[in-house]
Length: 339
Image (tube, rainbow, N blue to C red):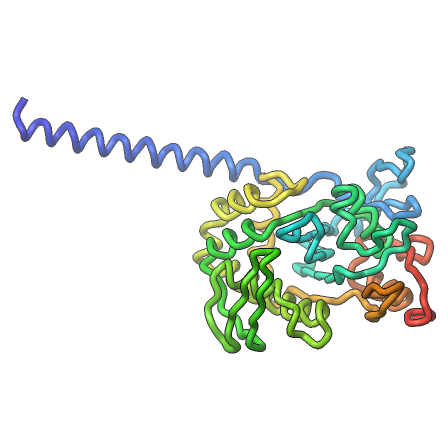
């Protein structure tokens, strides 16, 4: 066989290989797009047993709760609530805790940051909410957060540091105005933070370090939460850029591989496709109202019961009826009594 014929055959093989590879990508992408669907049910249960949306669900004792048909207004409203948390690198304590309300109908996202030191109304020795996941897994974690919010979330997302770094790198990092010089060393966590103050581009690793830094804030974790809230908005703006919208299937696949969640791939892609049309100012962040205090020699964040109830009902309650005092359970001390 002549050299010319060999080259022609080689080119044909390369061409067919490329076409088959492209076809495989198109088929995989098509299958993923066809699997897009909203999360089913969207049933939300109050701790006292009240539910919404006219679907059968179960109370804490697993007894069926009969429901009346939902109103037309309720049927048209698409609201999902998520418990989102980041695990500490050393232990399974949750270092960052957020309740996220996603309102598809009104194109709005509300995020409630729950300080890791928030005290729970519990008889167990470890009373901080950041210990719930470690002690009892996602079931205990969801139950404990529900004592603060009054209702159970629809879905959960648990992420670790490395997974978040990969996701941030995949969207091209983020530009952010770092509010102060950040220098911190913790050999026990293999953590070394050295980020200068000022507007700059952060890759995944440095963005996560920025979010984890808290030692230099006068109010500790509360100061860190303020920076995290601004970082979340910057990341959302970056994720919604046209070049990243085009990569939605790829990004959703990456996210699903690096988090623990009960949202399947099709649901995740559907949710991402909805959120891509949200305006950039659609995200509003809140802090669980309370006060920092020392109790039995330990630092806690004591919730303000009345202020929390108002905040939940005004901004986060997915039900048609208000959350009541019977739905939440808050430890009362002189510092937070009457508030």
